[in-house]
Amino acid sequence: MAYTKIHAVTATVSKAVDYICNPDKTDEGILISSYGCSPETAAYDFKFALSKTSQSDPNKAYHLIQSFLPGEVTYKEAHQIGVELADRLLEGKYSYVVSTHIDKGHVHNHVIFCAADNVNHQKYHDCKKTYYNIRSLSDDLCREHELSVITPGEKRGKTYKEWQAGKNGSAWKEQLKSDIDEAIKTAATYEDCMELIRAKGYEIKGEDFGEKAHKFISFRPLDRERFVRGSAKSLGAEYTKEQIKERITEKALTKDKKRVPFPTRKKPIVRDYSKKNLIDTTGDKFAESPGLKHWADIQNLKIAAAAYSQTGSISELEGQIAAKSALAKTARTSLVETERQLKDLGQVLKYAEQYKTNRIYHIRYQKSKDKDRYLRQHETELLLHDGAENMLKRFGIDIRNLDVEKLRSDYNALYSKKQTLQNTYKTTEKEITGLNRKLDNLNQYLDRTPAPQATSDRKHGKSQNTL
Image (cartoon, rainbow, N blue to C red; front, side, top):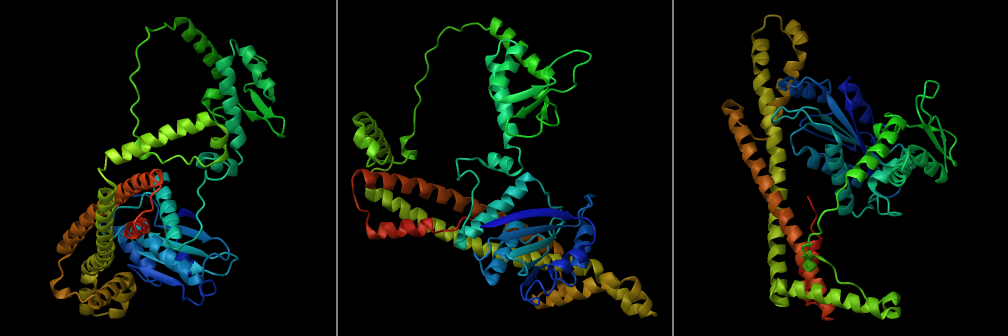
């Protein structure tokens, strides 16, 4: 199980990188990896990427932290998960440094990545949607590495919103608003509404109107020490005393104007029973209630019939699952290879632009009469040039015939291929899940043991990791 959080770096990138790369925290620097930069030159590389973007927000980098439960993961595996998370999240576009800290009671990863990407020169957009994506990717990796995953809403029937509200100490406010809403629906007058809220166990003050009355109404459950105001800031604009009274008045006016419509014949609801799972009727409640057992038998018959009518035969269904599993396996293999190529090409493109931009400084340095002075003035540009040149030679790129636009075109074509493969893989996995559900229903209904080969194919399909 891993927890994640992220924040922007607006000050000094070098200090942030130095902190996460502390040898005392990273097993003498062993648990450090990077992409599109090195820990020593990350500040320069990030500065170059930021100079290419036209977006003016102050964010220079982002600092992502991924924490694991104590004793659940080894240092090496935690670092591997951190690198995989950075690769999947940043898709080979952003330079990053990953380190794993082992100095605390729990192992945790630090990922610092540049706020601007090296391909399209766009800034990373940090919002709820991108954070949920980080959390989802982290959970997927935990499942792949057979670590526990906590999904808010699984325990005690709470949704994520309720779980988060409880964590922040605001769950009782949601209950208060729910009780006020219920009182408004029931009460005929404002005074009746106040009495109903008191009857639910709340203390109220400031509910009166007039010159000497309090500006805000306040509520307090009997088990809490402090009141909460019925204000736009505390509970929301709908829970001020003025709004509560207005909502009751509007409800009364709407009720008077309400016209009883002529009854219309409702269209029958057509249910797709093939998407349901067979009901297990072996429990005690079915044995004790013949009526419930009869209802469940009818539902199971509908589910089995729907599954059979859409497939033709069980052997045909098993054949479809085998074919879809082969397609998913092929798509996944191609997707993994395409992502690897994208990552490599992203680095090449980044260093090619870096080399091309700073090449002029290297030429001027060679021609300069006072090389020491020129070096002091343009040390950053010269470092970036030399670093890019060394990396391009390591990748086997001929720098004399460097074509940045051709590299960019190749990258975009590869990225389009990745998206197509990703859509094919996800669609096929969804289809396999539906076909497996139908086969399970038919096997269970007919009390049939599936063929060994079919079982093997299905297990193989289910073991595929979602990207």
